[in-house]
Amino acid sequence: MIALRTDGTTRVVLAVGPLAFKIARGAAGRRCNLFEARCYRTELEANRRLLCPVLACMKSGRILIMRAARPLTQEEQRDLLRREAFPEWEYVPHTEGAPFEYKASDWGWLGNRLVALDYSSHALFSNEEKQALFEEALRRQEAEDKPSRPEL
Image (cartoon, rainbow, N blue to C red; front, side):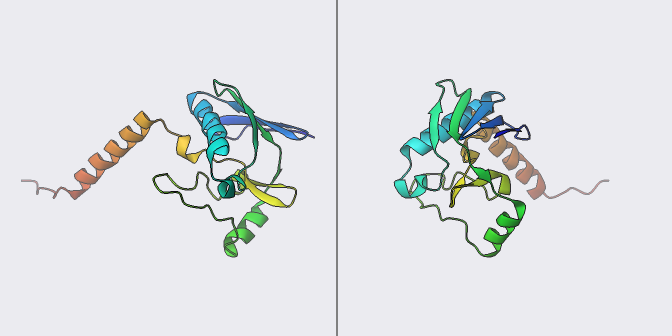
């Protein structure tokens, strides 16, 4: 089986037999690959079980190799949401929490086990980009909070 997904914003995914190659599109893609490799390597065992296994990652983050999984269908995703049956992420103090979203494209099946295929949501933006987004949100909030002056 060979499949190519090019709809990702930060990475292209090439699945070849039992392997999936996540190829970074740029700095954000490299950051996401490195984040997933570190997350899989360092996460609690209970949480790691929810993640698609990382087999290797280039030091640059250009390519990440994972196990290939059968993607979740939209119908399966809706059913899991309706039944509140997505796996629970065990919270660890002083962390950002679960590193995935509940989109159908972010989940798949390894045999009969549901796993997150994309768990790099915390790495989408650099610290500098996060700070700039935060500051912009503050500026917008302050602008909305200022009372308007009547025109003369």
